Length: 306
Ligand code: GLN
Image 1 (cartoon, protein in one colour):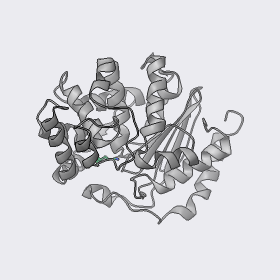
Image 2: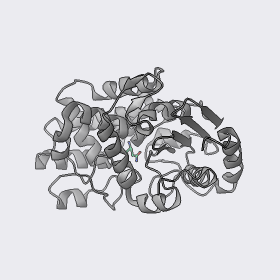
Image 3: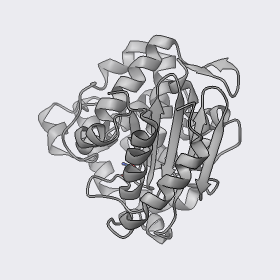
Image 4: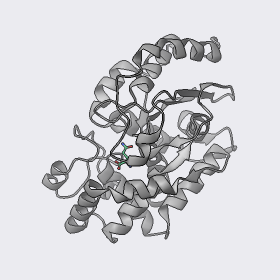
């Protein structure tokens, strides 16, 4: 990847993705997200050695949604260590991110920290130590991006007003004893966390420790121990794209996390992070154009880890 000009690759990718617009649907179950123009496309790459290249709408903020689950999991693992794994599993779910019956069949223990149930179990854990877990996540993301990022309260309210499925998940977990706080407080914290607004450039910067053995070359601090960094990447590779994680690994070959705002971040361990944004989603909630962009980028730079 170092020999090729990343900017040239991004320019090529931006042309290659063009035929793939119009194939997906924005996340209209969160009404506010349905208002984002479908034609948006941005991509940013940041290397461990400090190179940065962007294209399109890479500096426009969008709702990063489930991508925030990487920040909250990292925070929880740093604070609580292996206690996290007494609340959630480490296995791919093979079911949609808001699935209910698997959770009930498995006694309220979420398969992994990236499905909604798992992320809410993490919010519950964070509520043990802070009053406002969403503010903690926002602060952590701001620190990692080296820029202040904000929660879009309109998006948060829009999701909270229609969060019936997430409420069902939280109440089921409260009933089974997976979470210990008021389910309403857990859902509210989770929805506010998901409503974080970031740009591709900020996301690529914030995820850099995952590509650099836990160290942030941007803020010059160790964020995660090296062993934990490897484990976070393992979880991304196996659980980051929900029930289409297999085909994503087949096509892109990188640890990654998607969000229903249309963002995807991918990690090239030892080398770089890549963030892409395009709001039209496939039926699994992953950006259609974003996946194609990462697939092409991975092919052109030969950066797949597999
Ligand atoms: N806030 C969204 C939800 O709970 C996050 C889902 C996602 O981005 N995959 O439905």
